[in-house]
Amino acid sequence: MADFLAHAGIPAAVTDQALAIDAILQQWRRRVGKRELGRMALAELGLDIDLPKLDVLIATWAPSNEFGADKGETMVSTIATRLCIDPSRASRLVSELINQGLLARGVSQQDARRTIVELTEKGLATVDAVRTIKFLILGDYLKGWTEAEIDTFLPLLERFSSWSEEAADKGQTLLAPTIAELRAKLQKLSQ
Image 1 (cartoon, one colour):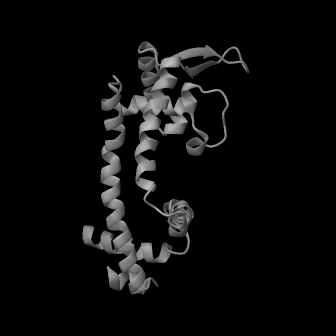
Image 2 (cartoon, helix red, strand yellow):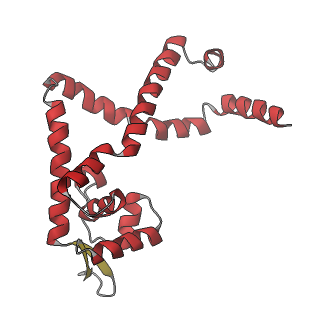
């Protein structure tokens, strides 16, 4: 692979760095995929919901640091969009959360024909408790970092978090000939 990447104009040192970053990200992805902290918070709080339902509660509440500044009315379609899930799945989860007393249906103030979804007092307390545990743990971890480390890390993490979007754009343009070589090689092996 290193030879092919060098042929594509990627320096050997950058290839080594990319491989190291990828190894860390794969380990992190597997841990995050297990959602250990979320499961722990739900268990510690004795909540009778699973992680997808927690996601719906949080998407209904829609913290601006996660979902942007749009604090308009929340409908089932809004939740589906925020979580990148099928609207029918969002609808089923919302119905289950309504039955559990964590969400309630309401009438839109903008259009009386629309049904909105709102957190109940119990739903808001659930979101608040889970997020408090999350930030207690994260805060406890970060308190060992210096201010300079955090000031360096945050902009770099934000910059790095968009690499796959930028890479997809480049894949369509700058890297297209190199990707075409890989495709041709695979097609030749498939014949």
